[in-house]
Length: 136
Image 1 (cartoon, rainbow, N blue to C red):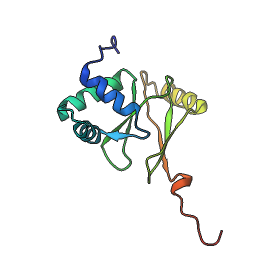
Image 2 (cartoon, one colour; image 1 turned 135 degrees about the vertical axis):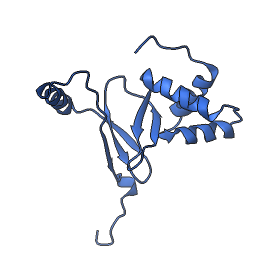
Image 3 (cartoon, rainbow, N blue to C red; image 1 turned 120 degrees about the vertical axis):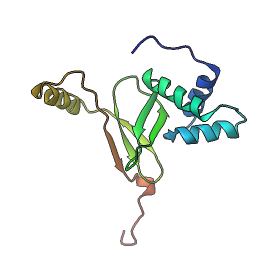
Image 4 (tube, rainbow, N blue to C red; image 1 turned 60 degrees about the vertical axis):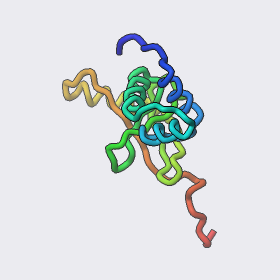
């Protein structure tokens, strides 16, 4: 990508909001939280700034399971990684998987593809959200 863009007032507010949230949020949720804090930011501005933050690798992006909705989260890791996401509460764990990375490169080479990118999210139910059966 090009050079990193300057942090505008709106982008800074969005970044700070995500930094203080544990899980992923949709652009609509970011917009609603900012409005609740008294910001007059517009929804289009939220979308545009989230995309810039994602392009600059300052936030993680994933698609909601069974949906086209993009979700955003402050990026704690500065290396390429994937996510394990709880379907119930949204808890997210960053995972890295070196074997997967080499497998993806190998598949791309075998099929004469270049400039390949990928995103891998695993969805499940975390221990806190798993019901304890009466049998235990």
